[in-house]
Image 1: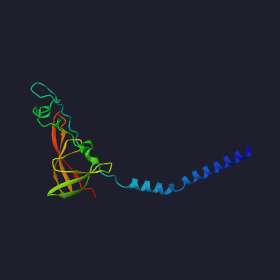
Image 2: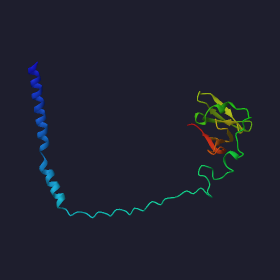
Image 3: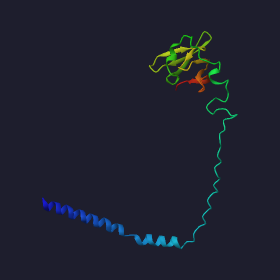
Image 4: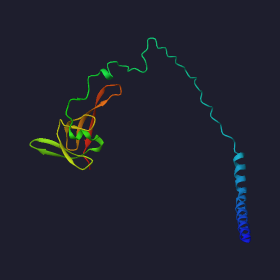
Length: 171
């Protein structure tokens, strides 16, 4: 067993010596290229750009509005637009708008209906005036390729705003 360890060690030393010997070759070419690069004249270095001094701002609250208050006091919580909390919710309002797919339209008796598929595969018929999605999305137009609606979403200032949205016909 001692003899096999000696053979393995000898083989490892032989491989190491061969590898190191291979690294030493080819240095003359590298040394020539370095010498050639040193002979070339040096280039001109561009000057550093001028650094402008930082101008400080001293906040004096006298006569200025608070940076934590809305700039328009009539916006936000005092605005009149609000979702109708007394309205009876429709079935498709339990689904988020991104989980619903428009799969077609239906014309019946001069009326145009949209066909909307839920994530569980059921197809529902909707008309202008119906609601979709969890943001009080009120359907305003049903076209061949999309259902357009207006959602009522928070504006970030304690109030609400209207936002257009649409369901496009799925391919």
